[in-house]
Amino acid sequence: MASFQYRAVTVGGALTSGQLDAPNQREAVARLRGQGVSPIEIAAARPAGAARSIEPGGKARMAVTKTIGELGVLLGAGLSLDRALALAIENIEHQATRAQVVALLGDVREGRSLAGAMAIRPGLFPPMAQAMVEAGEANGRLSEALQRLAETRERAEALRQLIATAMIYPAALGILAISVILLMLLFVVPQFESVFASAPGQLPDASLAVMAASRFLRDHGWLLLIGLVLVVLLLRAVFRLPA
Image (cartoon, helix red, strand yellow):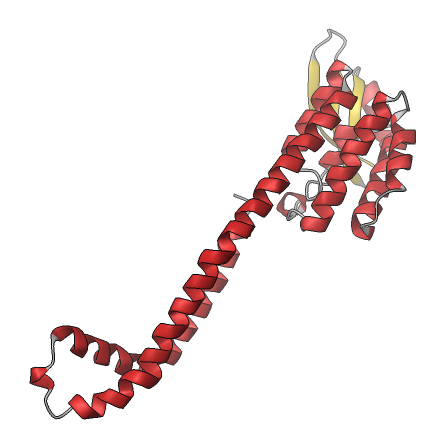
């Protein structure tokens, strides 16, 4: 028994939606009609873990963006949706993305809307893409909606790459600065510590603080390393949460 989400129109013309269980999609449609409503769209309910899908990497994002743009152009040229999708699939070089779009084409040929087929694959098509496609299908301007979507994704990817490139220099400086500080505290300061150990009262507070930090790092550095690893793992777990 499978679960299906549906949108339908009642006898009075009101829109309704919900979820029902049925052996297959045909039986689900029959049950809805038996309830006196006319189904507009029916699709397999999204698995519980689907919303946790992580956005794909750079190559997959570029492949999806290119495919969306090509699909918009092909639809604008007058091709049917399934034919345009079939032609766009032939130009996809990223194998994982190609397999997902092939499955999407299968859903479209079974009668599902393009937005509905995208909604099943939230990792590949984020909510914004689904909303733009659904709006394009509703107003009959799907080609324009897909081309605008491709342009939006291209700008977002360009901004992503710009930010990543801009972060390289400060990240390199930070790593270099931390490396120099560790080198000083672990190897240089201990060489002078024995020299000034005989007269600690004659040293300024800043020098005493540096030597204390050096001793703490040498004696308890492994605790700091473990703490840093735990913080990194915690941050990764937090950033993986859907919220």
